[in-house]
Image (cartoon, rainbow, N blue to C red; front, side, top):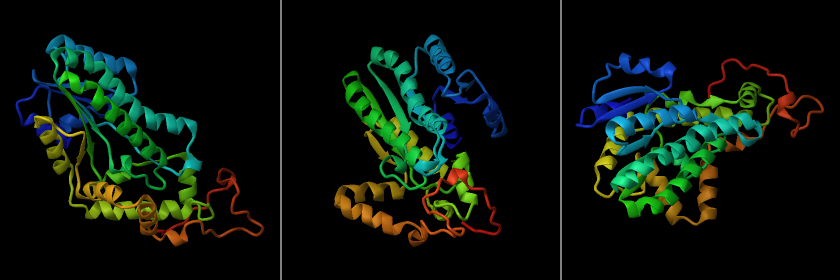
Length: 298
């Protein structure tokens, strides 16, 4: 929404898309349709809807000059708690859809020999965090494909950029999804991964609430990148993104991973559990019965 407001304030023709169930949010925020501002339904995982939006832009506006892939979801889950269905949905939204939309707009961009493709990545695309395995996988994939695309389309005057926000002062962290198994483990004190979820969830919430970056500041970074004559491939959008990028470059990899591991919230508690008599620390969490814990503050 912050990006939409920033673009509307400039002399751009804009196509704002959202799933049909979310389109009404634009009206609630005072954003209505006009000749230069279209509101279109788009579930980015739906190939037919992707094609329809791009074809309409080609027919009426001679193509898309700037593609901004901002849709994304995040699963909060360790590797053991991810089903194939969860994994496919995460990758389809965060990786497959952006690359498919890029593929659809590129022919007109190549013909014009100009264009911008901005893919919103994440600090999670440069460093992985526990309990966010498939989210990081989707962003690592987006980063790799975007880097390859940067080389491929530069000869045509097209620039590809990865916008890399880190922690943002918003309630976005509350939108992370649990899988069925990760929700059970989060709620069950005897789960092998219970403390992973409790401590990481609280850690992310605290940092997000204290972050200086806001949706508006990230939106300004996006617009600035669009308007640069030669935008870079990677654009850190928050202070912590800049710091983590620097750490990756200057620290030996062994020291880098040791430092991050020691920085995890109360990591010495991880793996601890209250086992029933004769319990096995390696038992399958999917066979445990949830034991709700009241009053636990992550």
